[in-house]
Length: 174
Length: 174
Image (cartoon, rainbow over all chains, first blue to last red; front, side, top):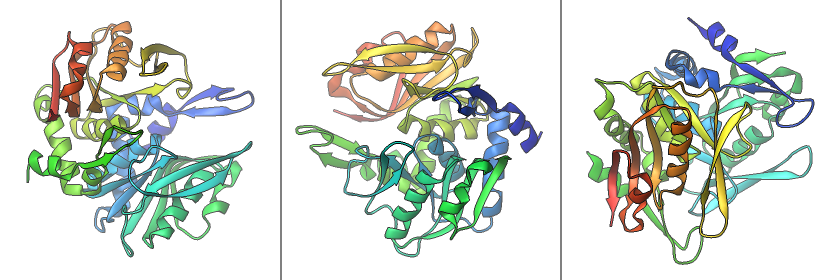
């Protein structure tokens, strides 16, 4: 089995979270120990010989892939969380939603200048969340080696929000 | 290094999320690849010879430990999420907070009758969330082998909410 089995396991949920949207449900991937291992190993494969200092993972599905990666690679994991969830002093970054804005945060002591990090989330849609996470990492002067996703919704052109960095997605939906 | 190093890394944050509460900040543990590995290996140690069918993990810090465990053990991971986050048909369970209630959900096809699962979250406080997650697992007639936590705040007596099941916590705060 390979990444095509992972892709086949994604379940399309129509009209979630609202009418007109087809949601990519990844829980069938997580439910299979075999598929979850394929995804984690594939996400880690470029980094096994040059392990980053940290995996930076976006709440909350990004945690699921990011922590398995960090465990396999033997590096730390830094959480990017929704506003109000991290207990220590934070930097925050705000991004636009269709209606309104959202804010994510990272602890101010999460990274040191020059740290090499991989940013991970499950899904690249418009790139708003990942773009905000990138700004938090930049604020701490860490180096982003790659921005990785399990799934990229290419028709939303989220790459435009992340143009300065290498982007890797295991599965592309056109 | 062992679990005492993990315990030493926990950072107490006073008055978070509100006055009078001392929050146990686990991000310094996550930040250290070595400590994160110690925690994951210790959480997995009872199950390596008798691997469960699934790790059931509670959003969202539970995802961080649960997915590393699932990767190491080679089993699937089932998310328990806050209401409105899971896209497919769900069961839900509501529990009391100090003021009001909260609801968690699990997909109706997440588990089959007789599946053996470990429930994991980072912290056992009053046991409200874990108790609700237990009810979801019971609703699907799966078997809970153990309910595991990184940290247990023993003075809140959360075990009373989980009395039917074996409970394991790596670190106990009296």
